[in-house]
Image 1 (cartoon, helix red, strand yellow):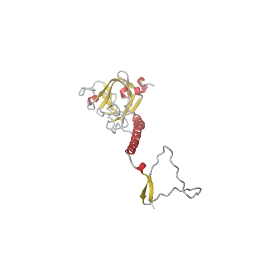
Image 2 (cartoon, one colour):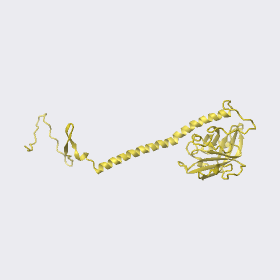
Image 3 (cartoon, helix red, strand yellow):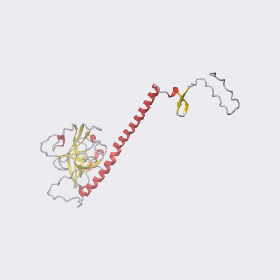
Image 4 (cartoon, one colour):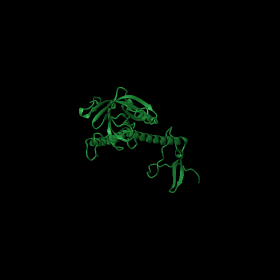
Length: 276
């Protein structure tokens, strides 16, 4: 009892288990240990299954890598939505606004009663189209709506309700988001070189940029009747565009001021400043 029996010679008997091959030089032999389970005893690789500092570190690195990959995919999807998704949505709403504006300018009786020739037209309701806005330098065109609340300017530039209407003496002020679908490239406009064109029911109004500046959000005097000089009576017809600055942030405001240099009846064609 307790003696180790000599190795068995299996010979040619196929029913007897074959002796396992001896390890080759350099191979590591891992000892098995028995472990009791509900189904009996089983052998496990005790040295391989026991957690070590290295194995825990590798597991942590692997988990962190998976989290970073997932986060990167989320960022890429968000960036794609910002670049292409919002542009598609804004373009679709702009098409609807174009149709609404064309219907109003055509004098459709379902839109509402028209004003008399001596009556000053009332501004449209918030969210309704006001005029067309063109910036040839960046090859952009939008329909401007009334109002500058987040809901108003979600899909279009918005007219500051208390500012002048297009072609009136004073400051026709318009706000827009700094996204690729609207005022993303507004910083490219050069004073005394670039033009902004406004389309009304009967006229083309050509404004020439005369100033670009960056201000604090609290400097609301930029949309005063005389920009930068609140309380002063307006004598010129000017246009102001406002948007967030820098890109992807909003702790500043980018301001573009332009002065009316040409009024032209739409029946005479398109202004040369619009290009081909």
